[in-house]
Length: 257
View: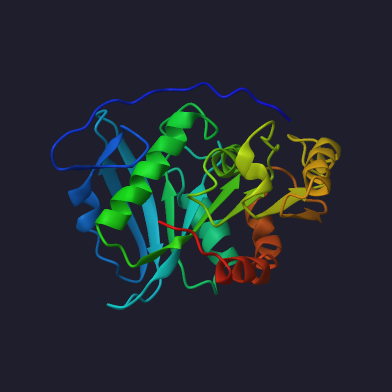
């Protein structure tokens, strides 16, 4: 489905802030340099040059001095309230669903009106650029974006708009955002959608996803049965089934960062 996405320009750059190559939005580098990668969950914040502060939840496995791990960015849906909106989706979906991936997970709180907005992507890009400059124990050729509902739509929009940034995408319980986005046919995606989803019609999602597959897009469509849109934790099993696919995709990723 074609969706028009409004554009927001950021044009601020301050001394001591890390700025992504294609964006004027900068991040406070020290916020990311001070992260201690202890095993488990941590609740953090990072500041941007536009004056905004983005809370995020981080989950790390055992990290050593030589670790270079995949980075899985988790985009939350619209259900949670509070400061750390990604916490529920991280704890009850992404981490248990991809428990053997040995990856670093980050679940930011959305500051833009929707994950499909360009300013949401700019914040993610600035975050990734800052993590690189802060020398996080991440293999930046293996960045995965996973999202649910609103966040799943963000996966489609972000991988479609900036295919060079992401090695893979996993949209769940979400309407496709495609149109003329170049990355739709480039970034491998594993699409999970329930036949019982009462928010996004399964028939329409299936039609649009299959249309992209027929065009040659590297997409796996994995329908599930009887999961309501709000039954987040029910999708853990379906996400576990995506792990072999994700391992294969990441083993072949060779992006230049």
